[in-house]
Structure formats: C-alpha cells, structure tokens
Image (cartoon, rainbow, N blue to C red; front, top):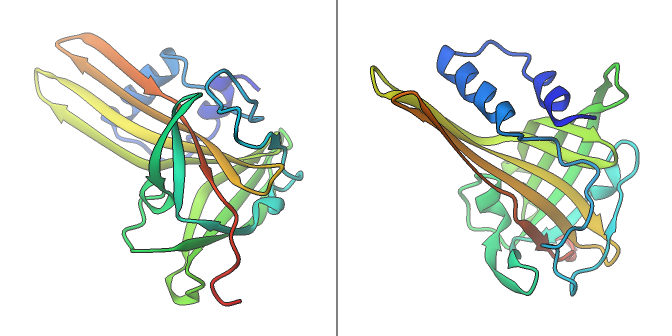
Length: 207
C-alpha cells in the first residue's frame, strides 16, 4: 500500500478548504502509512522485537502501563504517558485496550474501533473510531489535529497518527507520526517526526 493511497482513501468526510489544503500538502510531503511496523535504526535494541498482530488486530488487547518510554535516539529515551499521546486528560496508572472490527474494505483492511479503559473503569472508556487494521498493525489517525488560517498570510495545521503493535515480550510498541504543515505567504513549510514509544504490559487493575 502506498502512503498516498492509504491516506487519501481514508479521507471520507467533508473537509474545509483549509483542511483540504493542509492534507494535500501533507501528502506532497510524503506522509505515508507506517504499516506493517518494521524496526528501523531508531528502534532501541533493548526493546523486544516487534511481533505482527493478527489479521483483525485483536491481539493488541491487553492492559499496559500508562508510563512508558519515547525513543529520542536508539540509545536514549525519555518518559512519556500513553494518556498524553491519546489526548486523554485523566490521571491513570494503566490502560486496557480492546479492538472491535466493524467492516473490511475492498483492499482487505479492517475498519475497527479501539476501546481504551483507564484503570479498569468501564464508565470512563474512550472510543477511537478512526482506526484501521492495516497489514497486521493498528493505525489510529487524526488522534490530534488542529488547523489555522489567516487571510492574506497563510494556512496550516498539524496532526498526530499512531501505528501500534506489540513486542515479543508483550509490551505495546508504537510509531508516532507528528506532522505540521504551514503555507506562509505562499511558501510551504513541512515538519515531520516519527519517534518510537513503548509501554510495558501490566496486570489489569481489577485483578
């Protein structure tokens, strides 16, 4: 799957002119689908090897620590919270993930909903419906996005996508995709960062 096709065919909702402009620039800047997840030079050697998910990505379902590591380089990490990446504003010790497939598209990818439950609290479950099971990796797009427009100055926006799998030691591993696009006085500016993150598996809060 090419990055352009993978992203373009998932833009099914109506969009503002600003959003369309930003998405078009992002595609021109080579923002692509990161699936399947493959270890690269930035993946820390001390982390367990990546294990592909099942065809419907259900095997990602488990409980993970909210406190994890973000790989600044292959040998340097810094603390990161899974709730921060998921835009969940709540003090949390652990998060339980569950995937429910909705339908399969013409390319064989599954449209799925990711359910995230903090500390076993079913009343606080969060649903992420912009997720897809693509090549045995779970892709959740537009987890965070913002756009701006100033007449006669320019337009711009930013977006965060997450591509998740598990490692052979049971941890949750993901590649973030943070990109920012601006067009100021007709000059396009594009920034993109794609760090790895890891969250250890833990026992569910109700056990």
